[in-house]
Amino acid sequence: MSAEIIRLTERMTETWNAGDAAGYAGLFTGDADYITYFGLRLKGREAIEEVHRKLFETPIKLADSGQEPQVRQLTDDVAVLVIGGASTVNGEPDPSRASVITLTALRTPEGWRFASFQNTRVSRP
Image (cartoon, rainbow, N blue to C red):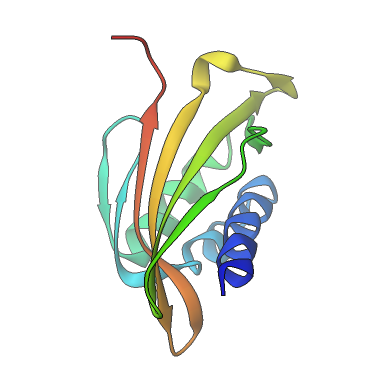
């Protein structure tokens, strides 16, 4: 089960880096809650697609954070994930964009999908 959920996170990176806004949004439930890196709250798959369509025109790509995703299975159909976020800008690593991402994965008739996403910049207090 967690292998399917990990694969979902890999697909998130693949669709982002391909600039596939519809594919990226398709990884989320229709009513997903999505909090961006800058604190913008998006509600639902359509909003996620619309905002990312514009974002994918920028030179920001996702990179391997070097951290293993942590998956905590709450029930057979619900899991919480914590993953590291890393990115490149114009092909160069950008440590100032490091983040921690928390997701809720939900088993749906379509397979596993993310029902929530929270991206928080790593900073020192």
